[in-house]
Every structure is written in C-alpha cells, then in structure tokens.
Length: 381
Image (cartoon, rainbow, N blue to C red; front, top):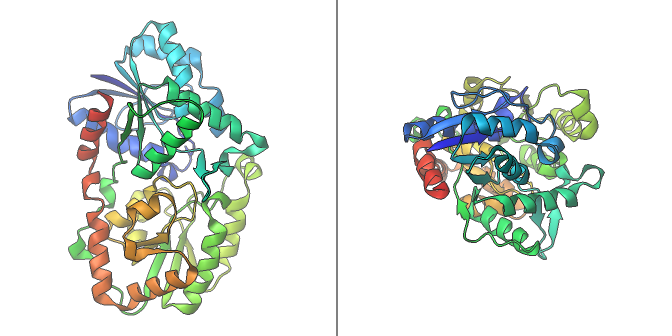
C-alpha cells in the first residue's frame, strides 16, 4: 500500500505541543514496519520522512485554503493509493485535487480536532477556538463537507465517534458505514515501568500539562488550583507549553498569557517549561505524582492525559467528554470538593495511590504504536 499522510502543523515553533505532529511522528514508522510505503507531506520532518509542500500557516487557512494546486502536483508525483487527511475540512479539496490529477485513491480523514461540542441539552455548540469573527458555523459546515468527502472517517474514542456521528446526522450526512475508532499512539519516550513509581509520602505534586487557552477551561482549573494548594497536601506544577508566542497569535487569543500570569502569582504553584525537549518533559512528569485533566467541554481525547498515564501518573478530571469515558471512575469528580478529597487521598493513602498508578499505566498498554498501526490499517483498508 502506498500511503500519503498530509500533515498540517499549527505549532511549528513548539512541536512538542502539537499533538497532530506527535501522532504522525509515532505512527508513520510503525506503519512502515507493518509493510506500508509511507510518505509524510509536511512543513517539518515527521515520521522519518518529508515531502516539501506548501503548508497553511494558520488554523483557518488549513480549513479554507488547502492549496489545491500544490496537492495536484503532489498526487501526480507520489501516485498514492490512500491519502490521509489530518485536517478533515480539507477533504473536499483533496478529492477535487485527486480528480484533477487523475489519481484514484481512498481518502481517510482523521478527525484530530472536533470544532464543536454538545451541551447538556444536546445542542451543538461551535468550539470557541474556531469562532473568531463568527466563523464557527462556517467551520462546522466545512467539517461536515469533509466527512462527506471521505471514504473512511477515523476518530480517537467512543465519545468522539458518537459526537461526530451526531454532528453528521444533523447536516444530512450518513457516516456509520465508514466511521472507525482508532486511538492515537502513546509516545514511546514517555513510558515508565510501574515498578519505578514511588508513592508520595503525605505530600504530592500535581501536574497540569495542557494549553492555557480560555476554551480549555483554564479559569475552572485556576479556581480548583487555589483550593488544592490551600486545602490539600498538594503543590502544583503548571506547564507553559508555548513560551513566547508571536504577536499575531497573541492578538488572536491573549488568554494563555493572562492565565499564565494569574497562575504564576499563586503560592504553591510553579510554572515549568520543557523548552521543546522531550527528555526534559519526561523528567517533569517523573517529578510529579498525579496529573490533572483539562476542563475543555469538547474533549474527545487528550495527548497530555495519555502522557501522564503512560508514565504511571493517576489523572484526576471532571466528568465531561472523553474524560468520563476514559478516566478511572474513582478519579472523576463533579465538584471542587470531590477533587480536593481525591487529591488528598492520592497524597496520603499509599495503597490507593499505587493501585491507581498501575491502572493508569495499564490504560495505555494497547496504545503502543505497533498496535495502533494495526488498527489504523484495518480501518483504512
């Protein structure tokens, strides 16, 4: 099989914070090992291979301006049998480019980011991150068009599958016969033997390793952080995943800088950066005792949660989205009071901690790249 993986990169200056890039970098070599001829078309080296292609420079260009001319030339040169669209909204343009190039290839769209969530009453809500200038509804329609243009639709989780199917149905698109759940692989550099894990001795360090955008529920986390460091034997490490962002990105959404400043001012909270170094990131995780999941309503999956769990860190989180599906029920909370009690027990109950450290690690055991590659190939064949 000749597979062409089209990878857009939204954080080229901070690749360790780009989950789509990490996914491709882990998956492509595993697909090669499985006998697939893989070419990765990306603006940066990924998965051991690279093809030069003009890559959209912003999140909206990636959805509305996918460079059809460049795709036609790429398809004619590479003659793929399968094209993976990492940006689902680009699938109609990919289909048009394949027609123009005279190349007969299947399109497998991976819904790496869902630009919507559902309210408690079942209302479809555009993701605020995709709604600058009121573009949210247009992005939703582009997403639906992408689903229609794909031969296969891949999602991370059962939660993502149900949301994606529901969103498709509301726009008159039937995808049940082409929808597949294929979770993302864990990073092999962030896997720790549970035997190496040392439980806290009455005081624990929690780590929050998520983007500090407002739409990730950072205000909700900040409120909980104040209570954790004041009421439980807990200190917190909050990761600054972006460092100094460009003025253009800050103008579009200044919430990470504001949230980082507020968190940095709190006693018991330390700000840390991996500086784009995966070994440093591993060491930061190894220096913590548990992780805290994001409070993002439309969370279909989280690379950062998997990173913690693969290192044997129990992750506590709110009962929303994929988190309610994936996290251990004893570590899921509905209120801040419950979250404080869970964190306190992780810090002081050695047996409780070790049980959940082992469960966390085990929850990622089927996410080894080779296992995920096998599921991937089964889905796109």
